[in-house]
Length: 319
Ligand SMILES: NC(=O)c1ccc[n+]([C@@H]2O[C@H](COP(=O)([O-])OP(=O)(O)OC[C@H]3O[C@@H](n4cnc5c(N)ncnc54)[C@H](OP(=O)(O)O)[C@@H]3O)[C@@H](O)[C@H]2O)c1
Image (cartoon, rainbow, N blue to C red):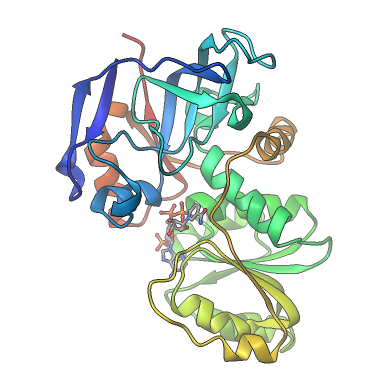
């Protein structure tokens, strides 16, 4: 099979399309022919060497798959050959999605939403699964609560806004002015142009000085530190960004906040739950662009540059 192999940590040119052995599934695994994947920030963070100690080179990376089961291991009972599936491969320690075939433990694989093409389904596993963990599992968002979602036009934010609306929340979302209409159309009740407005001042004013119940931080750093200003006492902060520098969280302590750091785990039930919402047309993919998988260098350059709306999808055309 062909794969985009990461030969060294560095810039986007560090990938090379190579022929490598097709993987063979173990008893509890499935072999999937990859139809589409999408590019996530963790891909370029991994590529440039942020997680050097967790990745052995040469490596095949990539954390979203929509594809078709070609072989099932002898212990797998819940799938059959030909099933259309979607999932997020384990982020570190296993081979990723930038290849024509992938093997995965059956426990992390889910049946693809019937109403989506592969290029659409590939937008969901990592970003949608993360939004689910942040708002449902960890953030415990309740009907009628208020939530601030940072980077509402990003991969995670664009799904999180829709999910928060399904859950009955009032949604503040940040984005730049060019994405205002998109973010509004996804369901945000109050859109904040983070480049020209102080989001904390807006949230304070619009909540009568009380603050929101929950903040979903997709930015990190100063965003974590400023969050206690805009969260009500006993409220919650969920952050998905790793922290490289020490932060003072004194104000969070003073307000009795609960802070969750999420590194999203892979499991099927959240994908099945997302599938229900997708099939009811309550969640839709936001696609920035679709390009051929062998253009992975360009995809990395574009995502890393910033300014994307939703997901960059890499499509595999069968030889
Ligand atoms: N812990 C986990 O399990 C996990 C899982 C998924 C993602 N993540 C992390 O979460 C972060 C977001 O992921 P993603 O996939 O959503 O990224 P993404 O799709 O690359 O996000 C791009 C968006 O971020 C917006 N943005 C950039 N700076 C902003 C700011 N200061 N305020 C508001 N919006 C801003 C951009 O808007 P403009 O173009 O308007 O500037 C763009 O719409 C990444 O750091 C990623 O590594 C973590």
